[in-house]
Length: 201
Image (cartoon, rainbow, N blue to C red):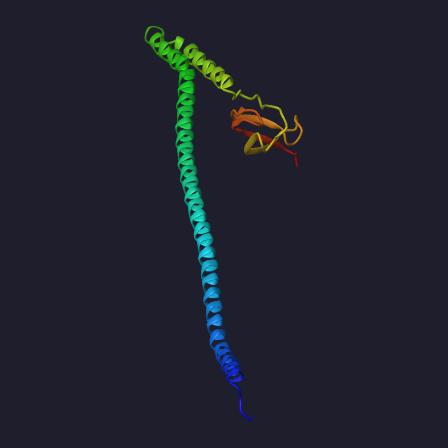
């Protein structure tokens, strides 16, 4: 069966259309892949930009904290130095106060020595005056002299150097004070050296 010119043209157009489809599809797929790659690259660049910004923010925060730490260390060192200076100033003031309290005692001693040259009998009275002034000075400094004779022995206040029997006093009584104690229970300068009575037999 012979074909007409019109039918031949129709078949040619169909063949041409059929031949064009396989060519268009790979191009469209390639374009889609390229667009997808570009989109992924853009998303990656955007994410990288966000990450870079976060890194910079964290780096700035670390530098800020390091600066605060250095300042805190400097402040602490300055505080330590200031406290050391203040403590030393207080110690000097206390030493000066205590030393000044003993100057009248030294004055009494010098007067006693001056009178001793003209009146040797006055030496005893002068020494007694110096002793009384020294005891008063210790009292004013917070260390009063204790009268421990006849009181019960207390290891916190007394240091026993001898034990002897004495039928006239109960056992454990201070019967002799060899060296007086100064200060109270909470602020004791030194304990008294004493002899203590023991039970007879």
